[in-house]
Amino acid sequence: MSLKDAFSRAFEIIETIEGHGGQAYIVGGSVRDYLSERPIGDIDIATSLLPEQVQQIFDKVIPIGIEHGTVMVRHRSESYEVTTFRKEEGYEDYRHPDHVRFVSKIEDDLARRDFTMNAMAMDRHGEVTDPYGGRDDLIAGKIRAVGDPRERFEEDPLRMLRAVRFASQLQFDIEANTFEAIQQKAHLLKHIAVERVAVETEKLYKGIGYKAGIRFMIETNLMKQLPVFRDYTAERLPVPEVRLHSWSEMLAFYLILDNGIELKDWVKQWKLSNAIKRESETLILCMRMYINQEVSPWLLYNLPDSFIAPFVRVMKALKYLDVPGVEDIQNRKRQLPVQDKNDITFQAQDLLRLYEGKERGPWIASTLRRIEQAVVEQRVPNDYEKIKEWVKWNPPANS
Ligand code: ATP
Ligand code: MG
Image 1 (cartoon, protein in one colour):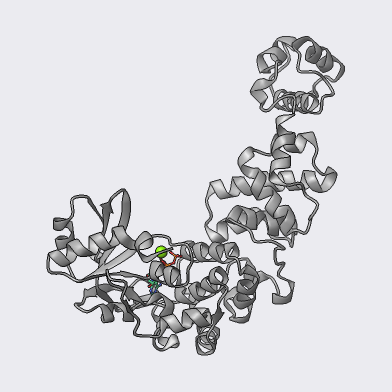
Image 2 (image 1 turned 120 degrees about the vertical axis):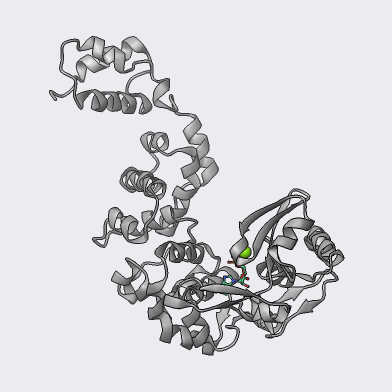
């Protein structure tokens, strides 16, 4: 992508800031990704102006973190985080810095950043400020801490896991001194909120270089700091055959390989959401069906459209390499006699009418479920009278 295609709108923001006597640069991940010819994500801007001043000179601003110096500027339908040049001080308890101090030079702002490749700034002419040799490290494919890695990881232990996830995403190596520092300081990761650790861990598994990433996670000792993963022996940690895209896929993968750890333990120890829990349950249900009888109509029926791709990925990750492709499954799913329980011509009220006087109980749901399965498997046509007949021959249990 050309410089203009990538950054022309962001440069307009910089121009406006300069018109008001400030300095501003594009910083962080987008400079890294542009220089290494990768797709660019969010564009972050660093400026010498204070957040209040930034708020005054742009029409559409959302103060998302004023105390840290950050405001969100909307410009030509895009959002930019504009953050005042700052230093971070007083990392107590290995948590977020106590306070930030605004500074006047971009170089001071770059010094607080984690890795050399993330510590570059670009002005609106495309001129790059690169005090730590980030560009050379990008070319060499090396993740190197800015300054003394031991100090930097003591300030913020999450950086260690970030190193490993960047290694996975970018297929980079971790520079030797930085690597050793992680090995030494890995234990500090326990001070970091598990939610933040979970975000980085998911990105690690999602990265193209996830196999090397997982290996780094083991070799740096970080694995021993990760809930549940720490319970595996390093040699025995299963590695997916293809990369997974989300926590629910990761859970499904590890749970089906059962090592005695239950879903509720994963969810509790990692503080994962109920949505993730339910998604992994659906996946596991369908995976069990596939393992028992490949792609049955009942499996297709129970696999929601949005779960097809995750299902295929997890099966491949488990080395079920014959699993059909996403489109194939979609097509077969469309050919089912019914798509949804509302399509069934015989519903709960019909069943209750048929068994008037029978006490209500779990038999209702289980009978309806059996009817659903019989229709899906074409053991009975989706026809009211035919189903009624079928129920008489296959009556509900007593409770
Ligand atoms: P991604 O593409 O994953 O968003 P990124 O480099 O933009 O990668 P962010 O977490 O969005 O990563 O952070 C933006 C920038 O802020 C980084 O490039 C880095 O300069 C700085 N940064 C982020 N987190 C840290 C940290 N824990 N310690 C030091 N600097 C950090
Ligand atoms: Mg980013």
